[in-house]
Amino acid sequence: MNAGLIGGILGGVLGIAGGVIGTYFSIKNTNGPKERSFMIKTSIVFWIFAVVFITFLLVIRSPYKWFLWIPYGVFLPISIQFVNKRLSQIRKEELQNQ
Image (tube, rainbow, N blue to C red; front, side, top):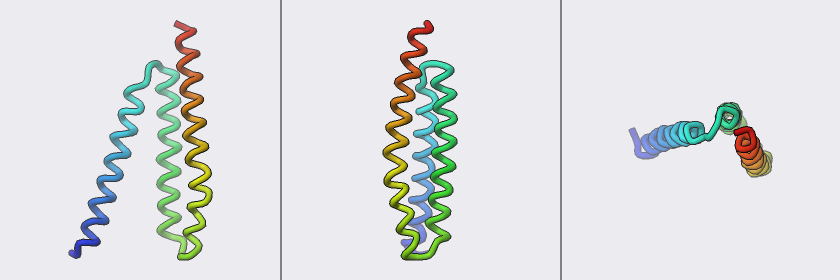
C-alpha cells in the first residue's frame, strides 16, 4: 500500500470517529428531555446531510462537483445558527417549566 491510501483511510476513520464522539457528547451534555430529543433529531439530519454530501462529491465528476461547495457553504452556517438559537429557546422553556 502507498502512503496516500493509508493516509486517506486513516484520515477517514479518524474523521468519522471524531464525528461520532462529538455527536455522543452533544447528546449526553443536554439538560432536559426536550433538548435531548432535539439534539438527536438534529444529529440525524446532519449525519444524513454529511453522507449525502460526501457521496455526491465522490460520484459527480470534476469540475461540476466543486459547485457542491456553494450550497454547503451557505447551508452549514445558517443551520448552525438555527440550531444554536433553537437550543437556547428550548433551554429557556425548560427552565420556565421547572
